[in-house]
Structure formats: structure tokens, C-alpha cells
Length: 103
Image 1 (cartoon, rainbow, N blue to C red):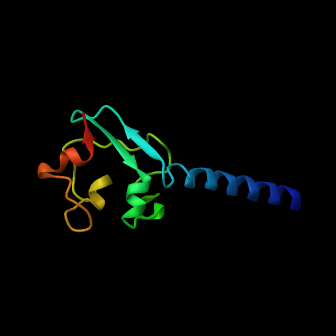
Image 2 (image 1 turned 180 degrees about the vertical axis):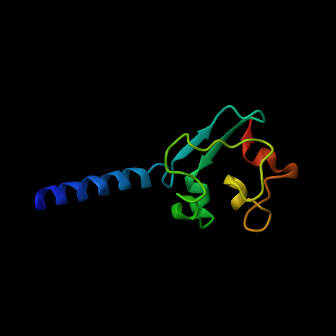
């Protein structure tokens, strides 16, 4: 029983470490298919601005890659709009589309 508990604990720890490192500092995630052009999330850029992984994960964005279904028009307080509200970070509305969307 003790061996089983230790093995289960190690398995859970490895699973969480793998998920926590999904897009670490210096890595990117690409959101293709956006009509305004693809969006590339850069972990390094956000870390340089003081963001930590647990600021967004798992509350705002699930840890599973591809689980975010971000639709336009973007809603304030959802997904990227949680921080990109014009107060904490640049607003996701108006003339700022090109800051994230690249054609």
C-alpha cells in the first residue's frame, strides 16, 4: 500500500510539472485561424512585464493546449481581456488589434 501511494504521488507530481511548463518563459503559443491574423503569445514578453504563469493559469486559461476558444468580438474580462483592459495592460479594443494579430 505504501509503495502504491508513493508511485501515485510521483505520477501526479510529474503530470502537474508537465502542465506547468506548457508555455514557459521564452516559449510561444500560436493561435492560428484568427480572421485578423494569427496571434502569437510570447511567454517571455509577458514575464518581462511582470506576469507570472499562475496569474492566468488555470483560472483564465486551462492548462490544456488548444482549449482556449477565443472568439471575436473579444469580451472584456474574458481570456486576454482579463488583463488587456486598458488599465493593467493595453486595451484589446480600438486601434490595438495589430499589437497581437499579425497578418
